[in-house]
Image (cartoon, rainbow, N blue to C red; front, side, top):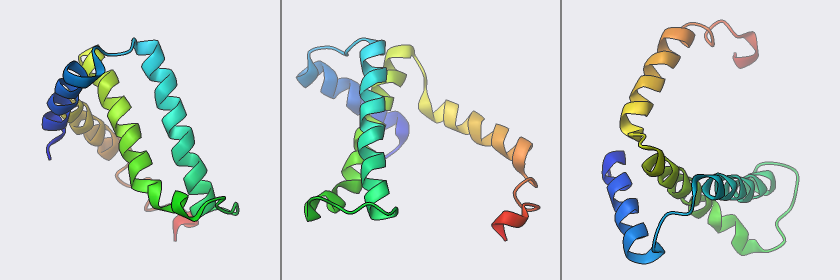
Length: 108
């Protein structure tokens, strides 16, 4: 699915099921909450903490999708076209970092 298609789908879902978007500040707080839930799973799956419940490990993709959903809500609310923003961001990273990481001894 294209990101622009997902932005439209999220907007349609909000209008059909969510009544309206939460305000931007609420959605920013929700984004932080979802990132925290993702971080908890990452710490247990790849870090040194253990899972309390074996089913939690299966939620990694779902938590990533939750982060993407709320981020997409914020983009829709603020008029950001994520495809354009991602394209510009990749161009910026390429221009700035095209050789930077190749010379990093820590990555070899």
